[in-house]
Length: 109
Image (cartoon, rainbow, N blue to C red; front, side):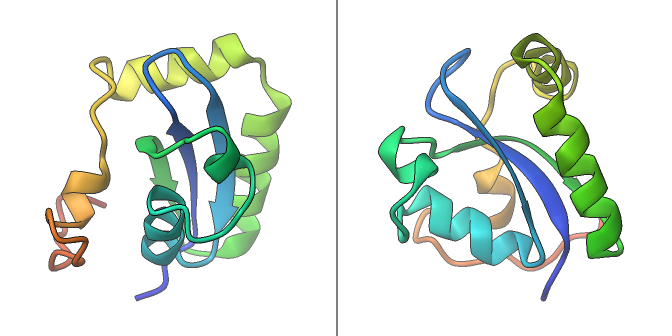
């Protein structure tokens, strides 16, 4: 199930942050978490999903990503802390301990 989204991955609390956009949220966060592709999240070990927003279309997701990337690190930290003060890994909302996608739940989105 494709869902356009913006998301922020981190390597640890207050550590390196990666803000991204995707047309397929579940696939992309799985790829980043498991370092399937070489790139920023792989190089800096950004495996913790600390923030996400889901959109109805890619156009709005891209606009939001530009807004996030244009903001300061301090603004990103404030955003993360406002929704996820303990820096939980939101991956557990979507994938079980075996890396299998849980059933879609309305309360997650």
